[in-house]
Length: 166
Image 1 (tube, rainbow, N blue to C red):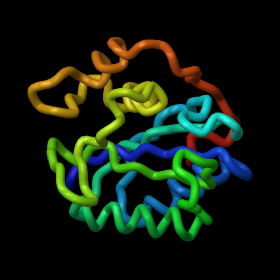
Image 2 (cartoon, rainbow, N blue to C red; image 1 turned 60 degrees about the vertical axis):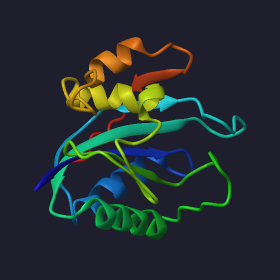
Image 3 (cartoon, helix red, strand yellow; image 1 turned 180 degrees about the vertical axis):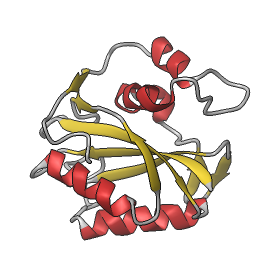
Image 4 (cartoon, rainbow, N blue to C red; image 1 turned 45 degrees about the vertical axis):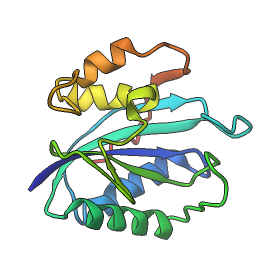
């Protein structure tokens, strides 16, 4: 089974409920080992929208990367994800951040996730569940990437009585 790290985000409707629902749905094909805290994040790109709640899930799956991405997209679709506005509001957003130590750069599959190194809202929750993991075998750890990132993004850990999912 491959070790995977998935990014989760939501800012429409009931974000905590959406994230909890996504974790439950992901359990159908990912053995969840750990889920980070929730992180409150100002939107990136399109600013005129509610803040996001973000988290990272650490788990294991038997699915190959493309099949995992397809299963994740199906979860997003079932949860009402719309893809009509880039960086727009989302009922749920699921990203494949890391898949074992796999590196890929092909149409529809880039591993590690191409923008995670520049996003505090990804690296902060990822560091909670994988601070010593190296996204590239010869590169810095997640904790080192986070420490090197400028503090331009407003990202803060937040608590909610219904998180983490049980």
